[in-house]
Image 1 (cartoon, rainbow, N blue to C red):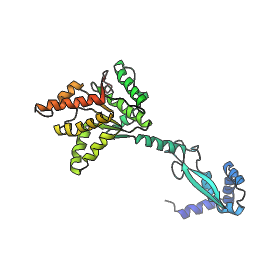
Image 2 (cartoon, rainbow, N blue to C red):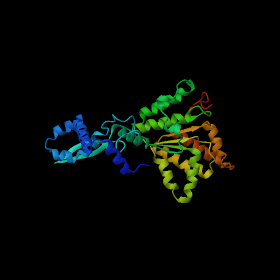
Image 3 (cartoon, one colour):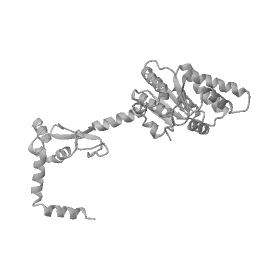
Length: 309
């Protein structure tokens, strides 16, 4: 690898003279339209001031001011990616400051809005789901989509109940609620999207580290709660009654919406919840959970073709 000293000697030998190269570079900098305008606006700067701070003028001219030299934020050519230079003076000192470019501000805004969607295992395809990309080629999905759009229309003022979307695998239930979560994020409404098997595991692990009450409280109070694939998890009577029941009871009392997806109708889910134990009294407890689900959501069948196949 060539040393810096060797590279410098080669560069100087290839130039007619160091001074000639310097003068050429200085001329190019001072003839740049943006520098000429800056100097016209700051005529108090002397020739000595300018020459002494030529490196700052070079730094300013070499960078993109309004993303014009960059094809994307990842390909930003500036010293600090996503930050564009601003030039000014303070007395006889030329000052360079850096502010976020439009692409960086747009990215930050997108990330800020994404922060409104919290999740326990939300797959990438759901994180990127959009309502305008939901396919409308299946009449058996229209009712669910219409009710989602109605909820969005009312969400900022007087949100209605959530929805209990049930139907076979692969009809797009989870995708539709992922799109809902992203649409709510655009309106700065916080949503918590929970995949139920992961939810059960999360609560079990929280028993050991004493964070269980804190986490349950978070699920109770989030403005919009989405419970994905309820009925697929193996849950104990304790989880059903003390965790799920407590969350639904709070949200029912506070009129906070809950959205569900399931492969079971509510009648079928009641059987699944009752089978958590063989005790006869479990049927009554399961029925109580179903009643709470009805209070916070409206059941909507979502049928159609399997889009995963």
